[in-house]
Image 1 (cartoon, rainbow, N blue to C red):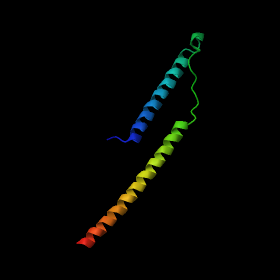
Image 2: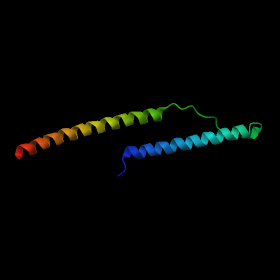
Image 3: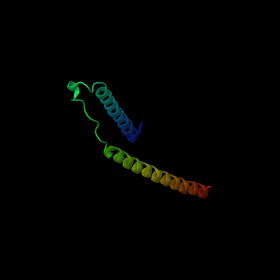
Length: 89
């Protein structure tokens, strides 16, 4: 089963790729058609404010922290279980 965060990361990567393609095509069209006033409607590149990337980094940090805490909990539970089994033998 694919993790929800992995699906979010794939979706974000696809969205960024699509936006980069749009900016590249607009830039190429603007450079090739600079002399023609009919193409002034082409969008200018928008500044990236990094809100999504900041949110993605925060989500990744929370996910990594939760995974580390889960591993520590699993290790301590495994140690407790092995001690109980050793005593029972």
